[in-house]
Length: 263
Image 1: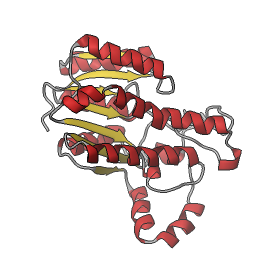
Image 2: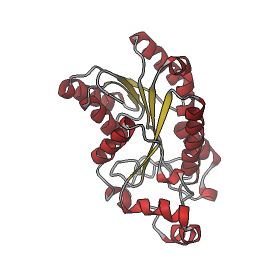
Image 3: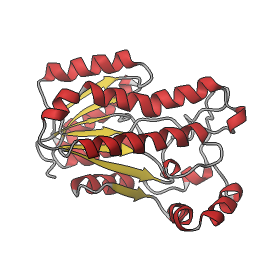
Image 4: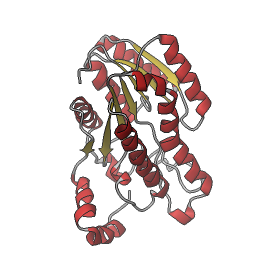
């Protein structure tokens, strides 16, 4: 698809992959509506999109666990009198705790943010989506959405759920084109905001995360995949081998996943 002159709505745009994708789209002439947590961080991204790339940019703070903020976002977009051509559903929170050491409230919060928030948001825009001739939807999942992994039970579950929901959505609506962006280890701050079993922040930079691929390289590849209408795009380095090991050598996967560092 051609990005110039289109409008994209991006969740999780204040930092990490969402911020980098915002710049990649703006660089290609896409007007952006930036959402996420932290008004100051969102304003920084918005101002860069406007001043460096010359596109129209708006921003609004939302909390995917609070559907009332998504209602406000929907009203805000309607007030702009624009159609959303590209949805980038990127926001999410990770986890660093074993299953039986994770309080159920944490499981629920992760599902609310990583899964139900995106489902609620996309359903708010159903009339716009059903009336469109072509809408691209980029969904940031994870290789953890392709298999289970230690210390990630709720996170894995939420990403598995995104695959099931949005693949079904695309099959039911030929005018909607879903690209699953599947990162492995990308150098972002996501591990710092990950949740421990008691709900507190992990607040550490995982060594694996720190040595992950550059976030801008990840975003560039993701945007190119959306442009080509690809269904899935793996984004990472050698850790992506686990995807193929799980698919073709399941017994080996179980041996490795128990031994490889989950951080």
